[in-house]
Image (cartoon, rainbow, N blue to C red):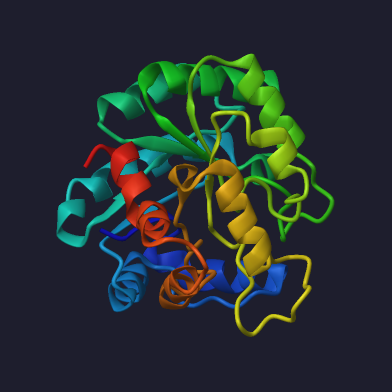
Length: 276
């Protein structure tokens, strides 16, 4: 089973404008329409069996509505095999009740984005969320490292991720972008001995990118991270619509990893986390 653990969609009525705005801001192309339908087409063409949608609340007042929409989507998700996580914002006043509500609705996890939410990952407002999520058995996926749309933002560096994990009880924390986009040199030293998991989204250098481009991991550096952390701590993610799922799959399959390591990364680990 191939599971894409890191995707994004937008409501049909705003997808075109949202994708165009974000694409222009970050100077990156989109590889699908950004709608749920566009994601389904791209994932099925690539042979992805299940997709995890990660909604982001950029404002506290968005949380309740986004989570209601995500829960409604999940009522029919077995048709498409695209399941949505929930969101939370560090400034949302009813954060504890909302996390309880998320768990009660059988949603498997939440997405944090320190850059968009302008809060350090080791801030007490996030620590309380991580603590409660861990107690509820919710998976937490967070953006990690710099953000292409927020130059200079240091809200979620490997140092802050390590600090956060040291301050809270057991929690399943997935650090996107192989532990820290463009912070990869610090990832092994600061995070390998923690419980953090990593996802592959927006990390591997695509074929069209120049060799040595600092916004991408080389194949060698990627494989070294896999070996340092162990393949069982790595989750396949595309960051769709910001990558072509088929190209991402082909890239990982071509890496000098064992069949067992590839199987774990491409779906086995996610299957275990999601209990499917």
